[in-house]
Amino acid sequence: MSRVLVARLDSMGDVLVSGPALRAVANGTRADGSRPNEVVLLCGPEGTGAAEMLPGVTQVHTWPCPWIVNPAPPVTEGLTNGLVEFVRSSRIEEAVLLTSFHQSPLPLAMLLRLAGVRQITGASTDYAGSLLDVRLKPGEDFPEDQPEAVRALGIAQAAGFQLPQGDDGKLHITPSTDDLVDELGKDGPYIVVHPGAAAPARAWPALHHAATVELLEAYGHRVVVTGGPGETSLTATVAGPSAQDLGGKTPLRTLAAVLEGAAVVVTANTGPAHLAAAVGTPVVCLFAPVVPAIRWAPYGVPLELLGDQEAACKNTRARRCPVPGHPCLTSVTPEQVVEAVERLLGGVSSLTTRRKVWKP
Picture (cartoon, rainbow, N blue to C red):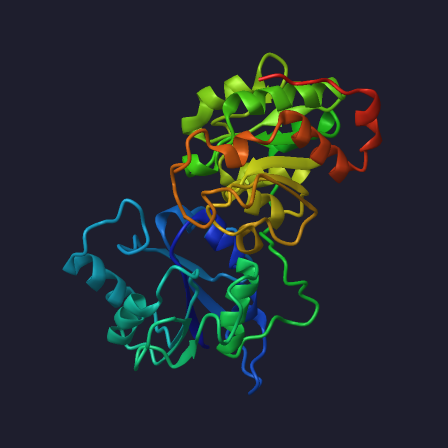
C-alpha cells in the first residue's frame, strides 16, 4: 500500500483549490497502472478544517510552516524535527508539493529528504538540485496565468497522477447535513452575503454590504448573512433589522451546508468564495486585484466578478490597501452587486422595473 504526502501549507481557500490534485493522487491511475490509495495531506493551521472535508484524503497532518504561516512561528529544532519524525514514522514514500507562484517548495523538500522521502515533485523557479525528482519550471513548463486549481492539478499530473475517469476536475467537498440548514430551507430560497475577508485589502465596506442587503430585500430576496466568531459586530451591521444574521454561528461544515443551500453567494476573494465553489453555488465575487483573478477567482461555478482589476494595487499581494480610499472595491456600488445577483439568477429584467437608487 503506497502512501503519498501532498503538501498545501497555507489557508482554507488554498487547500480547497487543491482538491482536484488530491483526488488525482488518491484515485487516479499512473502510467504503470499503480494506484496509491492513501494520501496524507500536510497543511497549515488555517487549512485544517478544509482539509478534513476533501474527498480522497486519508490523513490530515497540521504543521505551522515558518515560511508560509503569518505570523510565522520561530524556526526551532523541535518544529523541524517534529515534521521529520512524523514523515519517517508514517511510511511516506513520495511527496507532491503544491505551491503558488510566490512560494518555493525547496525548504520543505529539504526536510522531506531528511525524513527519507525518495520521490518529490514540485514547481520551482529556482534551481532545485537534488531536492526535487520532478521539477516543473513556472512560465516554461506551464503558464502562470491559469486557475490555481489547474496549476495544482498540473503538479500532480507531472508526478504521474491523472484524475480518474468521470471526475469533472472541479472543487468538491464531502457532503454534510445540518439542522440549521434544514431550518433555513423551510422558508424558501435565500441569498448569502458574507462580508468578512481574511485580509482588509480584500474587504468591501460594511455599509456597502448593508445597503446591498436592503436592496436585495427590496427586490424580494431573502438574505442570510454569515461570518466568523470574530465578525459578529460586522454581520449585525450588515444584516440590519430584517436579514438573518448567522455571524459566529456557522462552524466550517455548517457554513459549507449554508452556502450549498443558497441560490447565490456574495463575498470577497476569501476562503468562503472557494467554499461556495466547492459546493457548486454561483458566486458574486468582490475581487480586489491584489492577486490575479485569473488565478484566484472562484473556480468552476457561475461567476460575476466585480472590482477594478486594473487598479493601482494590482498584483501587490497587499494585505492592507496601499491606495487611499480603497478604490478598486469602493468604486463598486450596491446596485451593481444586486444586478450581478440578478444575472446569476436569470432575473436581469426585474431591475428595470424595481430600481432603488443607493446613495453613499
